[in-house]
Image 1 (cartoon, rainbow, N blue to C red):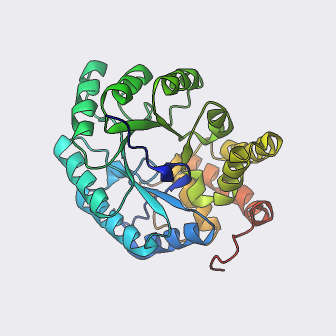
Image 2 (cartoon, rainbow, N blue to C red; image 1 turned 120 degrees about the vertical axis):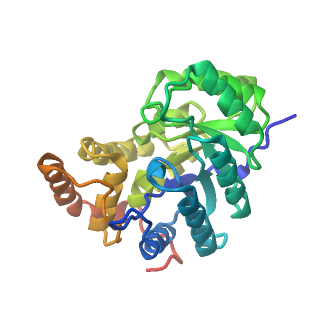
Length: 312
């Protein structure tokens, strides 16, 4: 049985943060504004419920509602990938069914995060659950946030489970690229890059698309780079990667989802409250970043103007 790799994966997917209220429930009007912001700036792919979305802080019911609301709002103007990370297989399967009902083209499946399972156990878990899901599955390789399945096991699963079509690699590990490229030579494999600092290098090793947290706040930093890489304009891509790297440098001391929210606030997009109160040190880092970013954001339009026909 061959792999069913959706053509729509060759795209930039913005990994959306979740706007929260003080009580930890999503702020729906803020989520709507966030989606509008992305569509207005040319995004054609959205990823819901991933690490940038702080999935560990959202219930299955909340995530189902997020899928429904965003799918209703975009009405086919953007493709959806839905992440289904949970600590129970039944919840993963329920979210996968919800994603399919909402028209998602793929599921993003991370390993469990809490208990110290062995890598062989993780291989069994992900393989058995992934095989039963109703959409093509991308394994979410982000060992800094979950139990480490290991790149060798990720590639074994892609090779042996028909429904598991590829991976999003957010490990930040350059050595993974050669292993992924070698696996691609043996059979179909959808490679999505999740580490924005390695975007250029990943495409040189066969990445199909990008699932980017930064694209949710600064699509102008990701979309032109993706298009330059697709067009083979390597010098332009290097220049754009350097500009992206500058942004990454300035958020290096902040939790990634929070950095996206702080950037979006500077751009006038309401993002609710942060998940935890910041101490003095983190508050200072957040102020420094927002002060720097306030002087940068306007210049991004010059790099990548809002697409013709987009809402102004």
